Image (cartoon, rainbow, N blue to C red; front, side):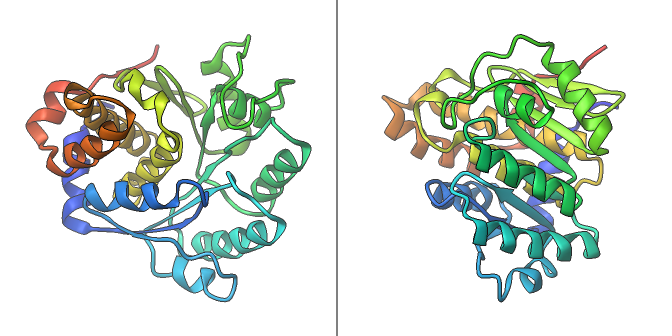
Length: 266
């Protein structure tokens, strides 16, 4: 199946889905903004007293453990339960998995107690959740001496979900198929939050596209095309982020169709 990213982008803009986040306090502002400039509606509700109700009116739920606490994970499980009941997609960004035992434990707790439709992380984060003996450097990827496509596909098969591995080239895998997204720019590595924003974009596109792998690939491609456009004008990391928000807001179908680099893997 070909990925028609521009069509899904237009659905995001026409349907304006509400994307509920329980996310990283370091990057929450940027995650909200990237969802907004692409045409959807972000909400960052963390209080356990309201998360289930908020998830009940959302089109997708994004969970990010970047600044986790035990209490936040309890709220995540309440929100995920409501999302599962409603049948909306749940995205789990396993931010920092492999760095500490506590972080790993809470990732596995969420995966065992709730249905997660899309697991997203960098190479070492995903490898750790897949059971590999790797250690993440804080929230930065460490080297993984494994076939990442196979690691992601095996994890997807065991968890009955879509697995996204972000990096220089992004892998979007299910048990029996995979895509590689080759958009993006090295400048993305120079600002905090590009990975968290990627999870938000995956959730946004999954809110309007039922094929989770296609939604993930399309969301990443559109987001990373905006980054490529921004890098042409930016003088450094600060202006790059501003230019990326502008590029995302102004992104049109013709540009997406021309610049998209998504390949179905054999």
